[in-house]
Every structure is written in C-alpha cells, then in structure tokens.
Image 1 (tube, one colour):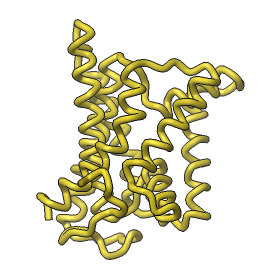
Image 2 (tube, rainbow, N blue to C red; image 1 turned 135 degrees about the vertical axis):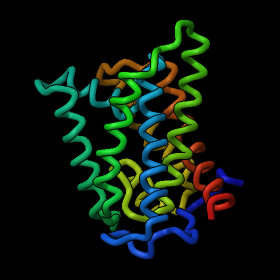
Image 3 (cartoon, rainbow, N blue to C red; image 1 turned 90 degrees about the vertical axis):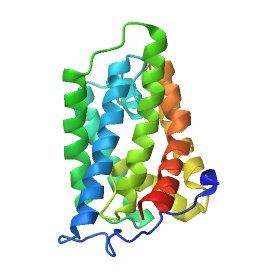
Image 4 (cartoon, rainbow, N blue to C red; image 1 turned 180 degrees about the horizontal axis):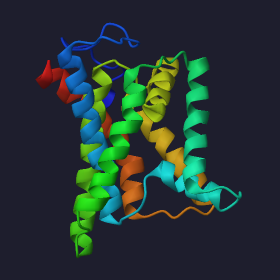
Length: 215
C-alpha cells in the first residue's frame, strides 16, 4: 500500500550519489520532468483561486506581523528550512537548484496562460488535480536522487529520523505550517486544506507509481 512507503525508491535511472554533476541523461530527464509537473501543479493551484499552498499561507501570516514583503519572507523561510537540513543530514544536489528554477518558471507560465475556471465546482476540481500533479511530479523528481527542494528535503530528513511513513510525515509538516500561518492571520481556502491534507498521500502515490511503472 502506497501510504505505508517509508523510503524513496531506487530505480535504474536513479543517481548513485546526490551530489552528482554528471548524471545520466535519463536521470536528468526524469528530474526535469518531475519538477515540471511539480511546478505545473503548484501553478494550477494558484490559478484555481481556491487558496494558496500552506507555505504561502505561512509567509502571508508572517508578513502581517513584520515589516517584510511576502517574497522576502518566502526566501527567508526557505533558508531556514535548508538550515534545518543540517541536523537531519540532508545533502544538496543539482536538483535543489533546479527545484527553484523550474518550479518558478512553471508557476509563471500557468499564471500567464491558464485561465481561472468560471464556476466554483470547476475551480475545486482544478485544485484537486493540481495537488495530484504536484504529488506525482514530486515522486518522479525525488527518485532521481539528485537533491530535493527545501520542503521535500525536510520531509525526507524527518522521515529518516522518525521512521514514519512519508505520507504521514509530509501531512504533519503541511498541517503544522498552515496552522501557524492561519494563526498569524494568513488566508486559508479549501485549496489550502486540500493541499495540506492531500499532498502527503499524493507524494507517496507518486513514489509508488514511479517504483512500479517507470523503472
């Protein structure tokens, strides 16, 4: 059962080392493909107008209490999460850099070219699809083993320390983040809750599918 997955699968195209500057072409392809899906999903969630992701809610909440922009706070949060990698023994890789670049590009493309659905039911369906796409994309790029983004690295590190299933660890992280953001005044929508509660199982599903299909 995919909800019980406790480690990132290794497949034929997974990199042997996280810090690998000369990965196989197939490894690099799946890294970029997974991150493209991940960014597409995040962009579709924004376009759905059903609520921001938990980490955006946190940044918004903090911005209401300090004299900094949401963009600046988002950067500081990412730096803070990366610092938390140190005691968790997480390693950087080219995937960590590609994560920021590709996801940002896909979000911009979605916001520019994908129209927001005209009725609420369609917006809700788009939000559900977006969370599923983020999860599957996350599963694909994580299996490449070329380095995770800040949030995914935190998830992997905490899973290794606790031994809990990946789906549960990710759910705890996202629910905690959105709870703090909401307490600080951030705006929570149905899409936010879908992401917070659904991203853990969706990432686990993505890892399961990659292990069974893409090897």
